[in-house]
Image (cartoon, rainbow, N blue to C red; front, side):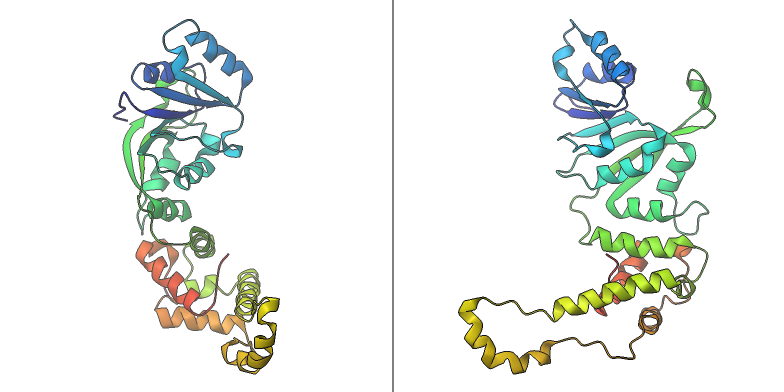
Length: 285
């Protein structure tokens, strides 16, 4: 983690504090988030009456349901069941932190760093790599734990991209989610799902209605009466025979991704595809 004397460190799931104490000796402050009140008591007892006590702050509760404080680095042997939601909570956290050094279940860690074409490449891979640089640091065998778990582990370094890419993440994730539901299917087939078509049709109609909205105050009401006849020039109307399925397939063909599969597409591919959809008024959030 290359911790510094001036660092504030976030630790999630400190347990009885083995890692916590090591970090307290090296940094300015450790903020430990623990959901189990019994373990909170054990951790408090461990530092009570020592010079480390005033450098430890404990937050009791579910870290996924609380706002994260300011911190320079996150270092944790993470509870594996919250791995995915916690990673994205971290990556969307502001202000930016320097890095996170986290232990995950091995397969999850390999998904984080998987590249296009890999069997493990998935929505988690591309979403994480859009927002951060991710490196697999080392394997940790199950025999290093007492008692030994049933799974192998890995330590991963996550460094958020600062500044982040200029992309609406909700839009991006909506597109990627659809593409990776069946990552081995062509995008043309993936977007033929009735549920997907209904969602995008609904979003398209909302988009059009928003562009049809004219805002004005009473002060401009008289002026509005004079120009209302010209408003239709700027209105995006939906033809009666409009079919979202045809528009979706047209975008896929025009962007050249109709026969592509999510498993082999990289970040640049999805950025171009998202731009193609958005340019035609099709949105994913």
